[in-house]
Image (cartoon, rainbow, N blue to C red; front, side, top):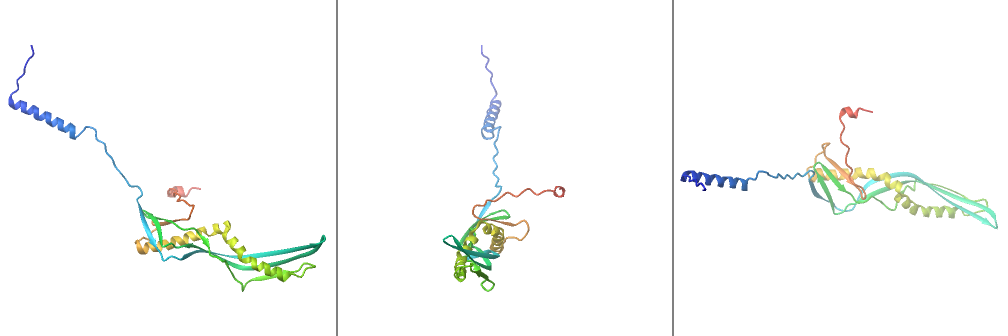
Length: 227
């Protein structure tokens, strides 16, 4: 026979309240909780630098350039000599970047990253005619030394353009140009963005095709003294 237990009214009320509290605790406060945290490691702030347009001269290369033109003739297998002309002059290769109406840069903490326009030579290339040295002489049976010299002089401008565009000169001006752009942007940041001149504040300049390289971790004084 089943046994029936009768609870007093007060006791029954306590049991019901405890059951409700237990259900509420399980429903609203589960035993296992999940914690989600979001941290922004390197916030980027886009900034627009407004300029007046035009060109910013970023580097100059001064070189003593020498040009030579030779003209050799033969007649029925007889060598008539070679006319040779030389021109030497100081040359100023100037390089610039175009100042667009707006430059879009990114600030990451204390670092400003600038994607600069490409470096281009200012053409035509300038050379000092006052310091120009010329020399020409005929072959033993030739009378064209002045014509040969004139032809050489006419070839200087296009030849200088080729040299200005050469990989050697272009590579030579990259770092001076980077420094010029860095100073240009730094002055703008100090004026418009209240940028600091403290060592921790830096401006990284990237030209087309370059990527920002991670800086090596700073070594301790003890490590720095090791050879």
